[in-house]
Length: 266
Image (cartoon, rainbow, N blue to C red; front, side, top):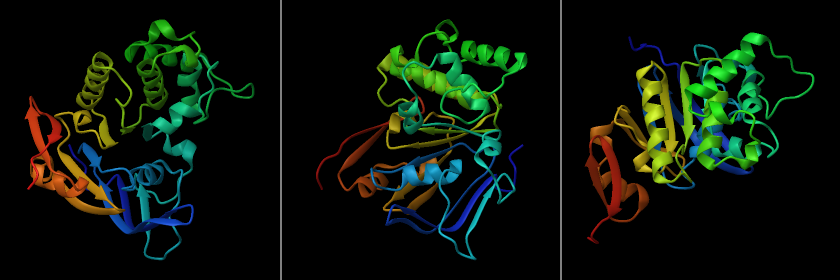
């Protein structure tokens, strides 16, 4: 059953990237069980939104600002990871090349980048990490250094890292960027399986092909503002994308997937 109370709520949020204001009193919420794609061009504020959702960035102080995550307005990053798993480009580039694939998954228990001598892992955690590696399709690569893996294999280990706490929500940042077609399609199928298993998916992207058919809500973000928000069939249109990107775009839909093509000049 879909929860009535938002699992994530941002209300009147002002946020900065350096000295630049990205959001000015942004209001946006997400409910459990409602899969959402957040779509927008470069500079729309997607990365900043991702950091707000993951607890890496805090909004500017304001008495009217609300950032509520899973019913609480006070979270630390380590506790948040038990409820929300994040797979992002930024995370992928921060791992050292010599770290083993299994250590990437294990590091999810401490929300760290790699594992360290002072960290302790019980037998249950080791077993679960190996089980997750097999579940996401990289069980035969757990001893390989991260830097020797393909982009798709690295992305799967990062997904495993996000899954160690069995979070209710998974946030993906352009999950198939840099993957060839077979790896892209395989990763999308893994995402669909996770949704069918009960995970709520939040997808932050500007790649239409990454939006699985199961996603029912689309948020269009431009210049730090929500310019459209609603059911996918109503929001994801050629006219809306033409306005969003400032160029003629024709939308094609096949088997529940979307793709954008250059449109005729009007």
